[in-house]
Amino acid sequence: LDVVGEDANSLRGTLGATDKRKLDEYLSAVREIEMRLNKSASNQIAAPKFTPPESARPTGIPKEFQDHCRLMFDMMVLAFQADLTRVATFVIANEGSNRNYKSIGVAEGHHELSHHGNDKAKHEKIKKINQYHLQQFAYFLEKLKGTKEGNASLLDSSMLVYGSAIGDGNRHNHDELPILVAGKGAGTLKTGQHLRFAKDTPLANLHLSLLERMGVNLPSFGDSTGKLENIGS
Image 1 (tube, helix red, strand yellow):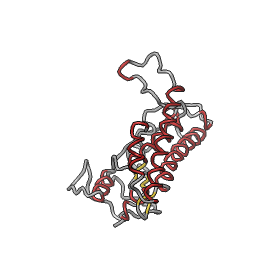
Image 2: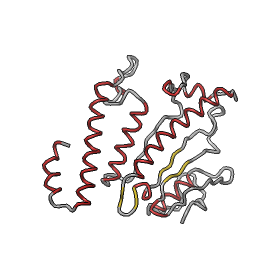
Image 3: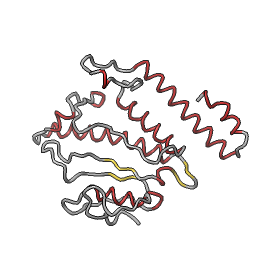
Image 4: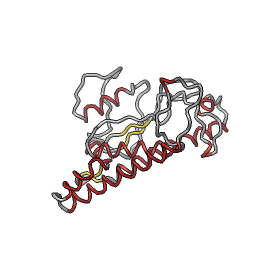
Protein backbone atom coordinates (compact mmCIF):
# COMPACT_ATOMS: atom_id res chain seq x y z
CA LEU A 1 0.00 0.00 0.00
CA ASP A 2 2.92 2.36 0.70
CA VAL A 3 3.97 2.12 -2.95
CA VAL A 4 0.71 3.64 -4.18
CA GLY A 5 0.15 6.00 -1.25
CA GLU A 6 1.07 9.17 -3.14
CA ASP A 7 -1.11 8.26 -6.12
CA ALA A 8 -3.99 7.43 -3.80
CA ASN A 9 -3.74 10.83 -2.13
CA SER A 10 -3.74 12.55 -5.53
CA LEU A 11 -6.80 10.57 -6.57
CA ARG A 12 -8.59 11.39 -3.32
CA GLY A 13 -8.41 15.10 -4.15
CA THR A 14 -10.43 14.59 -7.33
CA LEU A 15 -13.26 12.58 -5.75
CA GLY A 16 -16.59 13.50 -4.27
CA ALA A 17 -17.50 12.71 -0.67
CA THR A 18 -19.08 9.30 -1.41
CA ASP A 19 -16.20 8.10 -3.58
CA LYS A 20 -13.66 9.38 -1.05
CA ARG A 21 -15.33 7.27 1.62
CA LYS A 22 -15.30 4.20 -0.63
CA LEU A 23 -11.62 4.72 -1.44
CA ASP A 24 -10.72 5.13 2.23
CA GLU A 25 -12.67 1.98 3.14
CA TYR A 26 -10.87 0.02 0.43
CA LEU A 27 -7.39 1.25 1.37
CA SER A 28 -8.07 0.60 5.06
CA ALA A 29 -9.09 -2.98 4.23
CA VAL A 30 -5.91 -3.47 2.19
CA ARG A 31 -3.78 -2.15 5.06
CA GLU A 32 -5.53 -4.45 7.53
CA ILE A 33 -4.80 -7.49 5.36
CA GLU A 34 -1.15 -6.44 4.98
CA MET A 35 -0.82 -6.29 8.76
CA ARG A 36 -2.45 -9.71 9.18
CA LEU A 37 -0.14 -11.21 6.55
CA ASN A 38 2.91 -9.77 8.28
CA LYS A 39 1.71 -11.15 11.60
CA SER A 40 1.02 -14.61 10.17
CA ALA A 41 4.45 -14.69 8.48
CA SER A 42 6.09 -14.43 11.91
CA ASN A 43 3.79 -17.04 13.47
CA GLN A 44 3.44 -19.55 10.65
CA ILE A 45 3.60 -23.28 11.25
CA ALA A 46 6.96 -24.80 10.40
CA ALA A 47 6.91 -27.08 7.36
CA PRO A 48 7.01 -30.79 8.30
CA LYS A 49 10.42 -32.39 7.76
CA PHE A 50 8.96 -34.96 5.37
CA THR A 51 7.54 -32.32 3.02
CA PRO A 52 9.40 -32.40 -0.33
CA PRO A 53 10.95 -29.09 -1.48
CA GLU A 54 8.54 -28.69 -4.41
CA SER A 55 5.55 -28.61 -2.06
CA ALA A 56 7.00 -26.46 0.72
CA ARG A 57 4.46 -24.53 2.77
CA PRO A 58 3.85 -21.05 1.30
CA THR A 59 5.11 -18.22 3.48
CA GLY A 60 2.47 -16.41 5.48
CA ILE A 61 -0.22 -19.03 6.09
CA PRO A 62 -1.73 -18.28 9.51
CA LYS A 63 -1.40 -20.88 12.22
CA GLU A 64 -5.13 -20.98 12.94
CA PHE A 65 -7.41 -22.50 10.30
CA GLN A 66 -10.13 -19.89 10.82
CA ASP A 67 -7.65 -17.03 10.43
CA HIS A 68 -6.44 -18.57 7.16
CA CYS A 69 -9.96 -18.93 5.76
CA ARG A 70 -11.02 -15.43 6.69
CA LEU A 71 -7.84 -13.85 5.37
CA MET A 72 -8.44 -15.54 2.01
CA PHE A 73 -12.09 -14.49 1.98
CA ASP A 74 -11.15 -10.88 2.79
CA MET A 75 -8.72 -10.81 -0.14
CA MET A 76 -11.40 -12.24 -2.43
CA VAL A 77 -13.80 -9.48 -1.36
CA LEU A 78 -11.17 -6.84 -2.11
CA ALA A 79 -10.48 -8.40 -5.52
CA PHE A 80 -14.20 -8.37 -6.38
CA GLN A 81 -14.62 -4.85 -5.03
CA ALA A 82 -11.81 -3.52 -7.23
CA ASP A 83 -12.96 -5.66 -10.20
CA LEU A 84 -9.52 -7.30 -10.34
CA THR A 85 -11.29 -10.58 -11.05
CA ARG A 86 -14.85 -11.79 -11.34
CA VAL A 87 -14.18 -15.46 -10.63
CA ALA A 88 -12.48 -17.03 -7.60
CA THR A 89 -12.27 -20.48 -6.03
CA PHE A 90 -11.17 -21.50 -2.55
CA VAL A 91 -10.77 -25.04 -1.23
CA ILE A 92 -11.68 -24.95 2.45
CA ALA A 93 -10.76 -28.64 2.77
CA ASN A 94 -10.22 -31.26 0.09
CA GLU A 95 -12.07 -34.56 0.12
CA GLY A 96 -9.05 -36.46 1.45
CA SER A 97 -8.17 -34.00 4.21
CA ASN A 98 -7.51 -35.56 7.59
CA ARG A 99 -7.26 -32.24 9.42
CA ASN A 100 -8.45 -32.27 13.01
CA TYR A 101 -10.43 -29.44 14.55
CA LYS A 102 -9.40 -29.36 18.18
CA SER A 103 -10.59 -25.75 18.49
CA ILE A 104 -14.19 -27.01 18.21
CA GLY A 105 -13.64 -30.19 20.20
CA VAL A 106 -12.90 -32.62 17.35
CA ALA A 107 -9.52 -34.29 17.87
CA GLU A 108 -9.92 -37.01 15.22
CA GLY A 109 -9.04 -36.44 11.58
CA HIS A 110 -11.85 -35.42 9.22
CA HIS A 111 -11.18 -38.20 6.71
CA GLU A 112 -10.98 -40.76 9.49
CA LEU A 113 -14.37 -39.63 10.78
CA SER A 114 -15.90 -39.68 7.30
CA HIS A 115 -15.69 -43.49 7.35
CA HIS A 116 -18.22 -43.38 10.13
CA GLY A 117 -19.87 -46.79 9.75
CA ASN A 118 -23.12 -45.12 10.87
CA ASP A 119 -21.62 -44.45 14.29
CA LYS A 120 -23.72 -41.70 15.91
CA ALA A 121 -20.78 -40.17 17.78
CA LYS A 122 -18.82 -39.83 14.53
CA HIS A 123 -21.88 -38.37 12.83
CA GLU A 124 -22.05 -35.66 15.49
CA LYS A 125 -18.39 -34.77 15.03
CA ILE A 126 -18.77 -34.58 11.25
CA LYS A 127 -21.78 -32.36 11.83
CA LYS A 128 -19.66 -30.03 13.99
CA ILE A 129 -17.00 -29.83 11.26
CA ASN A 130 -19.61 -29.08 8.60
CA GLN A 131 -21.12 -26.35 10.75
CA TYR A 132 -17.67 -24.90 11.39
CA HIS A 133 -16.88 -24.80 7.67
CA LEU A 134 -20.22 -23.14 6.96
CA GLN A 135 -19.49 -20.52 9.61
CA GLN A 136 -16.42 -19.53 7.61
CA PHE A 137 -18.49 -19.33 4.43
CA ALA A 138 -21.11 -17.26 6.27
CA TYR A 139 -18.33 -14.82 7.23
CA PHE A 140 -17.56 -14.42 3.51
CA LEU A 141 -21.22 -13.80 2.68
CA GLU A 142 -21.51 -11.18 5.43
CA LYS A 143 -18.43 -9.36 4.11
CA LEU A 144 -19.93 -9.33 0.61
CA LYS A 145 -23.28 -8.20 1.98
CA GLY A 146 -21.62 -5.31 3.82
CA THR A 147 -19.75 -4.10 0.73
CA LYS A 148 -21.81 -1.65 -1.28
CA GLU A 149 -21.89 -1.75 -5.06
CA GLY A 150 -24.11 0.94 -6.52
CA ASN A 151 -27.54 0.68 -4.92
CA ALA A 152 -27.00 -2.93 -3.89
CA SER A 153 -24.20 -5.03 -2.40
CA LEU A 154 -21.49 -7.28 -3.77
CA LEU A 155 -23.51 -10.23 -2.50
CA ASP A 156 -26.51 -9.11 -4.57
CA SER A 157 -24.29 -9.00 -7.66
CA SER A 158 -22.56 -12.32 -7.03
CA MET A 159 -23.24 -16.02 -7.47
CA LEU A 160 -21.52 -18.28 -4.95
CA VAL A 161 -21.49 -22.07 -4.89
CA TYR A 162 -20.57 -24.00 -1.74
CA GLY A 163 -20.41 -27.77 -1.65
CA SER A 164 -18.38 -30.96 -1.82
CA ALA A 165 -17.56 -33.65 -4.36
CA ILE A 166 -18.46 -36.37 -1.84
CA GLY A 167 -22.05 -37.12 -0.83
CA ASP A 168 -21.22 -39.71 1.85
CA GLY A 169 -17.62 -40.30 2.84
CA ASN A 170 -18.49 -43.69 4.26
CA ARG A 171 -19.44 -44.93 0.79
CA HIS A 172 -17.20 -42.63 -1.27
CA ASN A 173 -20.21 -41.78 -3.40
CA HIS A 174 -20.47 -38.74 -5.63
CA ASP A 175 -24.24 -38.45 -5.95
CA GLU A 176 -26.97 -36.69 -3.98
CA LEU A 177 -24.59 -33.79 -3.33
CA PRO A 178 -25.90 -31.01 -1.09
CA ILE A 179 -25.03 -27.71 -2.80
CA LEU A 180 -25.60 -24.23 -1.40
CA VAL A 181 -26.00 -21.33 -3.85
CA ALA A 182 -25.84 -17.80 -2.43
CA GLY A 183 -26.12 -14.32 -3.92
CA LYS A 184 -28.70 -12.96 -6.32
CA GLY A 185 -26.65 -12.90 -9.51
CA ALA A 186 -27.75 -9.31 -10.18
CA GLY A 187 -31.38 -10.39 -9.86
CA THR A 188 -31.15 -13.59 -11.91
CA LEU A 189 -31.22 -16.02 -8.96
CA LYS A 190 -34.10 -16.71 -6.60
CA THR A 191 -32.93 -17.09 -3.01
CA GLY A 192 -34.48 -18.52 0.14
CA GLN A 193 -35.57 -21.85 -1.29
CA HIS A 194 -34.68 -25.53 -1.03
CA LEU A 195 -34.77 -27.46 -4.30
CA ARG A 196 -34.47 -31.20 -4.78
CA PHE A 197 -33.82 -32.28 -8.34
CA ALA A 198 -34.42 -35.63 -9.99
CA LYS A 199 -32.03 -38.47 -9.18
CA ASP A 200 -28.82 -38.46 -11.26
CA THR A 201 -29.16 -34.79 -12.25
CA PRO A 202 -25.57 -33.77 -13.12
CA LEU A 203 -23.99 -31.04 -11.01
CA ALA A 204 -22.78 -29.61 -14.33
CA ASN A 205 -26.40 -28.58 -15.00
CA LEU A 206 -25.97 -26.01 -12.24
CA HIS A 207 -22.68 -24.82 -13.70
CA LEU A 208 -24.28 -24.46 -17.13
CA SER A 209 -27.14 -22.46 -15.62
CA LEU A 210 -24.77 -20.10 -13.82
CA LEU A 211 -22.60 -19.66 -16.91
CA GLU A 212 -25.68 -18.50 -18.80
CA ARG A 213 -26.25 -15.82 -16.15
CA MET A 214 -22.66 -14.67 -16.67
CA GLY A 215 -23.26 -14.18 -20.37
CA VAL A 216 -21.51 -17.40 -21.39
CA ASN A 217 -23.94 -19.30 -23.58
CA LEU A 218 -22.81 -22.87 -24.17
CA PRO A 219 -24.80 -25.81 -25.54
CA SER A 220 -23.37 -28.01 -22.77
CA PHE A 221 -20.77 -28.09 -20.01
CA GLY A 222 -19.05 -31.26 -18.81
CA ASP A 223 -21.64 -34.00 -18.52
CA SER A 224 -24.59 -31.60 -18.35
CA THR A 225 -27.95 -32.69 -19.73
CA GLY A 226 -29.65 -29.30 -19.58
CA LYS A 227 -30.21 -26.25 -17.42
CA LEU A 228 -31.84 -26.26 -14.00
CA GLU A 229 -35.37 -24.99 -13.58
CA ASN A 230 -36.79 -22.87 -10.76
CA ILE A 231 -33.50 -21.30 -9.71
CA GLY A 232 -34.45 -17.86 -11.02
CA SER A 233 -35.05 -15.83 -14.14
